[in-house]
Image 1 (cartoon, helix red, strand yellow):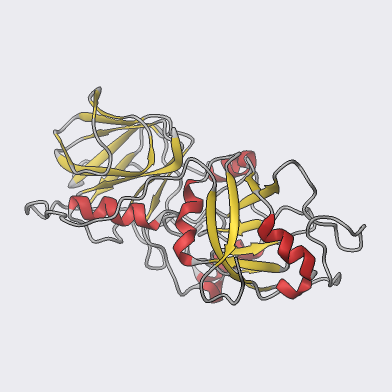
Image 2 (cartoon, rainbow, N blue to C red):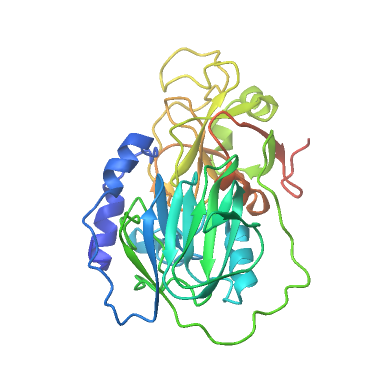
Length: 351
């Protein structure tokens, strides 16, 4: 799409009223748009994609401030991993990098460059030799970097010295899978431009925090949502007491959750009562503004934690909002992984 304000608003309004995220198959079909024109041979530096994996996107720290025209912040789901990758190669923390979902990615570094890979855990090789994650690596021209299948977490971040230099839309190079803003997912054979190398030494990163993707139950802090009172007091308590399981049809729009053991999460509006999350208010809700981390409960009964590409409005009640400090962990959750919720400090709750 063009990226005009009219186009953005139209794209967002095409989302389902309740803003339920698309399934994996629908996402793949939606994202395979027309191929971009190849980069001119005179480009300063490039990566040539050999294998794009299931989904590889260009992401930076997003485009905040455009909700009024239907565009969410978007950007890297694991912001800490993006910032770390950029710091390691001497880029500004918000520089654009590649977000590689589930691994299976390979590219030729066509001119010598520094790069770093952070985020999910899995085998990483340079011309067939295993290399470490979370460190700056110098690649010679023509070498091949490969990211194997993720064995821990879901999303890798590949930063190259100089940053990924695709054109920006609304001040960001990020792909938003809901509105279509930003560059399309990478394809095999595609050439990706890289910004000019400052030709300065890589700065020494003497202090940094490296958080490994969780491989067991994630405990997230929550604040009460604006419609928490649309659920009975007993249901709100059960929401915190329940162990939730990440559903397979989660994506960048949101992480769907099922109750462990397959217990129904809630009754449909007007349906039978006595389920796990019982509504105390049955009427429909007019669309309201949404933020990353909002947890909607649609009639399907699957609480959905909204992520960076969420719709900016929605018509399902928000029972709680994930604390910002806990939100990056949702980028790395794998289908079947367990999630528990606790009251965040200062939320007024207990537990």
